[in-house]
Length: 204
Image 1 (cartoon, rainbow, N blue to C red):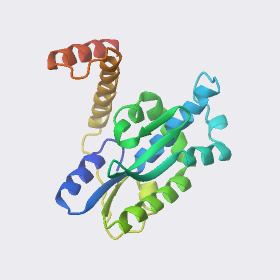
Image 2: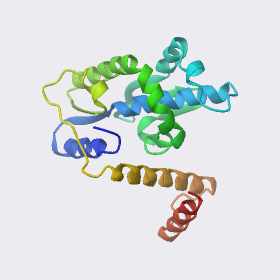
Image 3: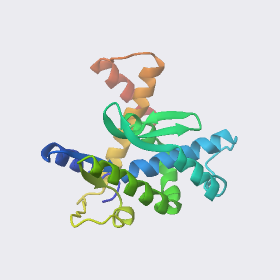
Image 4: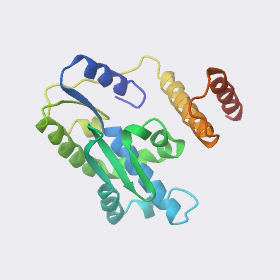
């Protein structure tokens, strides 16, 4: 399904219903690579994302080497290590990996990394399957179609405007999180969250 159609929500619900199951998002791998490509451009002092310079074969090999799939804190996860980033994807999948700059560059990155991501996914799902888990994979057809399975479903939306609304909400919450982190506020109150969101909306 397309971005924002509810793939993640659907597989999360299925994971609750199916025993010994876990979820997997191909989009998180593409977003992780995109984040690294953006960090590379920053490290080079480039004013903006430069696909021609960032997405060379050598750089793509380096970016892939910065992604590790294994068990962390008792759960399977992807760890990003490199170019100033050291984080688990589960911790940043709705914040840094959903940043506007990542969203803008991800189509370009995805266009040249399908092979790398398919290989990464195959190895990760094999590791989870060997651990006795049923793997629920979500992603775009271009990548998911390369993964052999008799069980395949596509999600669609009758009103595609919902996709934009959802993405706007995610960006607002990511920005609000940064505001509270900068102010060292660990548990903001409801009224404080509302005030910050109202302020952020006024800047849009």
